[in-house]
Length: 222
Image: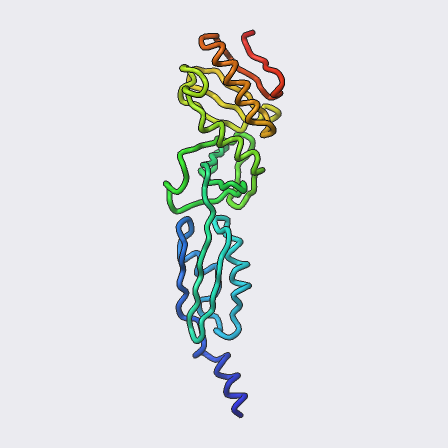
């Protein structure tokens, strides 16, 4: 009878989680974290911290989570959220998303939660949770930090674009010309090649400079 009473008490209405404390939520709403964890109202003795963590990791902005269940009726969730390194904008009409160094795209409650480093994606509309090549993200952010002082005086309002096809990463400036970098491989060599050419040709009329092959340069008009 004692054992039966213990079992009945453990699965009855008295041993349920009534409070879920959330720490570390910045990009994600607290209510979303609580709902995703599925801990609120769960049986205290049968609720699983491991299962709650797995559910929380499905939120794109969450990199990791620590979950504790505290008998009799409380739980604690500590989030480690992703750190945005750039803003990823789809030209196909999608919302501006944040991206971290691992290439994971995620939305955020905080419009100021990412640096003012933007990449426009012309290849396709992207979704939260989608993962880009980290090398591509790193290369794009390096290009997005370039300015006239790094290139030449007329390279104002530079804009980084992930163009469709083999063109790949492109840096376009307000003067109407662009630098075509292609893929992320050897991006530092490509940047150095472009900078050297622009430094040696500070007033040459340009339509484009192509450094997709870091061992040679193509430009127009030639």
